[in-house]
Length: 258
Ligand code: BTN
Image (spheres, protein in one colour):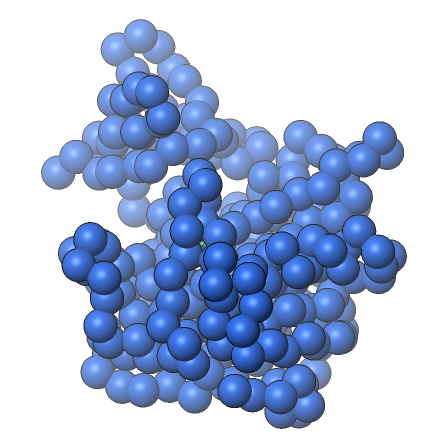
């Protein structure tokens, strides 16, 4: 377990990580960061934990992570982003984490819509964005990041699709180094994301995504959409050409049809 002092030592960010709250065990770093967001008006705080008893994933799923092996943290932000563009913050976080991990492991990282990062086609990182909307617009955004770093064994139900940095590269990593690298890239890209300027972020994310021009299926809770992934919409939705016309989707599990 790293202390907040260790995790901040040498960190030279302006906003992201200006306060760090470190826990050995917590229910969910996202839930804790939301509580902070409700009572505090600042931004940049990071809640990090070695283990979560109720880690949250996208679409109501749980995020399971071995104790003291991985990175589990959430960042509280208050960007000046129009409500309808708030979903682009997922792409901001994905691009930042991808940049950081590439620097740490010297291998290319793939972005998969909407919130996954892949190494050798397997998911090692998931991002859970939780926005709090107020009458005046976006009150705050919680960027939750789960990175499988050193975990080797995976639950059988996800073993074919999930991975960790250690599994893919055969090396163990210092979690503090990875944590600080990710906070640094989140801080760098936040300069534009904070102002609602996502052009470079979307370009970076798109460059790392391999599904455009390819046949995909999108599984939504009650139905499946099939078509060709065309591009991202201005608000981060995925534009798909289907036999029924062009559709934009905002949620679901995308699979490439090879
Ligand atoms: C997903 O791929 O479904 C998103 C997973 C996000 C998991 C992280 S772990 C840290 C933060 N706290 C949570 O409860 N969830 C996110």
